[in-house]
Image 1 (cartoon, rainbow, N blue to C red):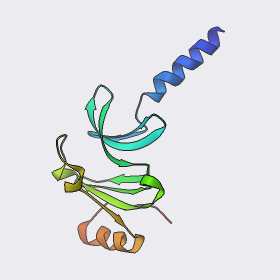
Image 2: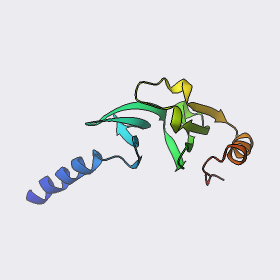
Image 3: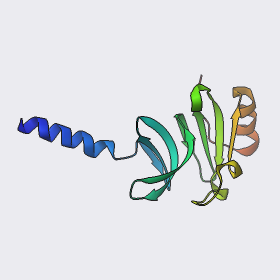
Image 4: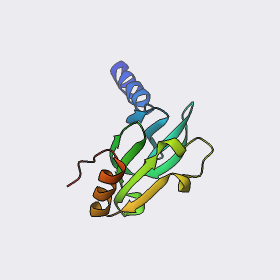
Length: 116
């Protein structure tokens, strides 16, 4: 019984940590749904996009492949325009097809995604 309590405690503690983070951005789980959000601290987030599958980052942009509402596509976030009070429509761009996103990667120097 003692080991069961320790195991459950560890699961709860580790489930509170984000699965990916870069600066204020974190991938988190709430009520069984995964999201990429802007962290406000103390476990509070402002959601930027649902169901991210692949994320790459550089100094200026976040490139991601995500499947919000079961419709997958390529997106990018302009980090220089984002802040905790910003509307996501101002700096989250997409969805794009793979070919269009590959063009954007070259012209805008977006981080490369490894999606086949």
